[in-house]
Structures are given as structure tokens and as C-alpha cells.
Length: 480
Image (cartoon, rainbow, N blue to C red; front, side, top):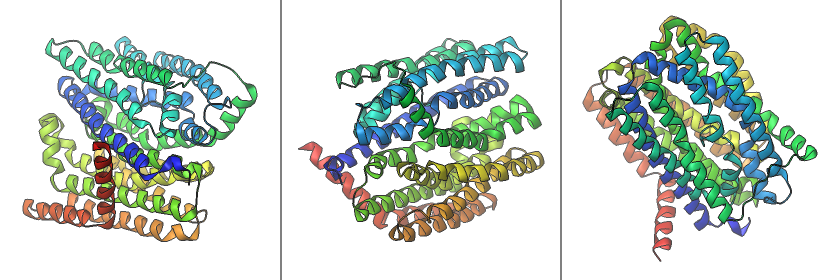
């Protein structure tokens, strides 16, 4: 394995990603909770519906490039013109996507104020880190160099400014569109910082169209683009159904539960994008297998701890944060968090496959999953409403994980398979048990016993001890 990926540097990169994403999550959640309390259900529903629609159009400039860019930057750096071609394509496709949002809003929305909401949200395609905007190539290069701390700092600037602006606007009783504008354009701060840091580090991306390189970018990224399109459809199709059956107010309530869960994706992101350069660069099988096993195990225990805490005390925490207006969806919040256990493992395995030039694996899995999920979501949401959406999420992610594990085990070395099958089985068992805890009228004392017992089990696990040892070494080395 390349000396670049020594344990100290890899640990530092993971710590920066994890710590920064935790702080970013806290800031982002605080912002959304304030918005949810300040806006009425209908306004919040329009905002949430707009985010989903913009998310679909944002996939065009995203085009599934990010893992490919990290992989190529890890292997060849920025010298061969591949990254310039990708950057140029992103700029062109971003402009097309913004125009697409505007046209969609004109054709489908009657209310002028709703169209304005969509227009403002469309600018996230250009400037937001969360939408893999034109910032993404710079972020990918820094991630490949294991300098993710700069990426995290740019995102924290976004979140921090966003929170300050929205708190200020709420205090002066500003309009919903003013608050929405602050939510979007606060991303300019992090974007400016990232470009400045990249310039000082000698990273130069140019608008330069190269037909050969552009075709290669499209060819390499197309399977991931189709995969992401199907994933977003699979994951957010429920919003269209909820809006159909219950209107904007129902979407607003559901978004309160979903938006508290969605940022949890930082966990698999922090782990996977720290390990992705290692998997991409290759090395001896025994060394990469250790990273593979560690990634699976640490994400499993993170998922268990979060899902267990949510299943036992999540309802009280949710009600405290959002208030009585969202009390009816507290159980749905718990169900959505439990589904993340399968999602974490799926995220990790898909990006591992991407690092091995097997982008088609994700496409196969999500294609089958999308076909199966449509009738499932229509039936469950039509019959059980918002709770049906929570059940559908768990079933869909579990099915995707089962399909993915079955496909991946045919492509990995024999020594990888025991950890893979063990962790997938553990995810299924844990999800089943925790869904039972949520649905059953479990006494508070028993829920607390489950929480304390699960936490103790995690902290005594070998994986947790190894992770703490790496963290301890990292802190000690940086003190020196």
C-alpha cells in the first residue's frame, strides 16, 4: 500500500471528516428545527417539495462523478485533463439544471410565490456542497489527498452563516422567502473559502472542453448517474405520493421526521470517503481487507447505537425538538432512523464497488429495488399514510442490502466474505428487533435497560476498542 495511506494520516482524515460532519449536522439540524417551528406546515411542505424537485434536477450536473473524481485524483492527480473536463461538464450541466427547475415550476405550479420558492432553491445546484455542485471537483481532489479538513471547514462556514442569518431573520419576523434565501445563499461563504484554499494549494481547474476526456467522464460516470437517479426516485418517491394523498401539509409533517434523519448520511460518508482512496489505490489484499472489515463493523455499530437510542428515547427527544405541531410523526421518525442501519451498509458497499471499477453493481441493485418499491410504496402509503412511508423505507433498504450483498460476494476475494455476511445478517436481526421495540408498548424502564445494555455491548466490542486506540494515537501525535 502506498505510503500516502499511513495509519496516522488516514486517522486524521477520518477524525476531521467525522468531527466536522457532527458539528455540521448539529448546525444544520438547529437551522431546520427553527424553520420548522417558524413556518406553518404548508409553507414547510412547499419548501420540502421544492428540495425534492431540485434534488432530481441537481442529479444532472452531479452525474455520479464524485466517486470517479476521487478515484482518478487518487491515481493520476490533476495532470491528465480528466478533472478539467469534468469541471467543464459540471458548469454546463448546472446551467441546464437550473433552467430545468424554472421550466418545471412554470409548467406545474399555479401559485407565483411557489414558483419563486423553486427559483431560489435552484441556486443550490450551483453553490451548495450538499448538491455536489461545481465545488465537487475541488472537494474530490482534497479528499483524495486526505486533506478533507478543508472541505469540512468550507461546509461549516455554510452551516454557521446559515444559522446566524436565519436566527436573525426570525427575530425580526421576516417573510418565508427571505428565510429561504438565507438558507440558500449562505452557501456562498463556503464556496469562496474552498476556492481560496484550493488556489493556495496549487489546485487549478480550468474551463476547457476536451472531447476525448469528456466522453471518458460520461462513460465512467453514466452508470453512477443512472444509479443516483434511481436511488433518488426510490428514496423520495414517497414525497410525491404523500403530497398526492395528503397535500402540502402532510409533506410538511413528514419532512419534519425525514429532515432530522437525512443528515445522518454523514456517518457512512465520513467513513467511506476516508477509505475510498485506499480502496482505489489498491495494495496487498490482507491490508485492504482489514480496512474493508473495519468499515463494515464501525458503520454497523454506529447504526445500532443511533437506532437503539432512537427506538428507546427518540420519541421524547423528537417531541422536545419540534413541539406539539409534529407530535403525530414522532413514531415515523423512529422508523426512518432504524432504516438507516441498512442504508449505512449499502452506502459503504456501493462506494467500495465504485473504487473497484464496478459501478454497474449499484445500478443493478437499485434498478431491481426501484421496480419492487413502486407498488410497495403506493400500497403502504395509500393504506397507512405517513406510517406506511416509514415501513416502506425499512423494507426497501433491507431488500437493497440483501440484493447488494448477494451480488458483491461474487466479486470480492474469498477472505472478504465472512465479515460481509456476518455484518449483513447482524443488520437484519437488529432492524427487526428495534422495529418491534418501536411498535410495542414498551415501558420506559425496559427501554432504558435496552439502551444502556446496547451501549455497553458496543463499547466492549473489538471494533470500538480499535477505533478508540486509533483516535488516542491521533490525539497524542498531534499534541507532540
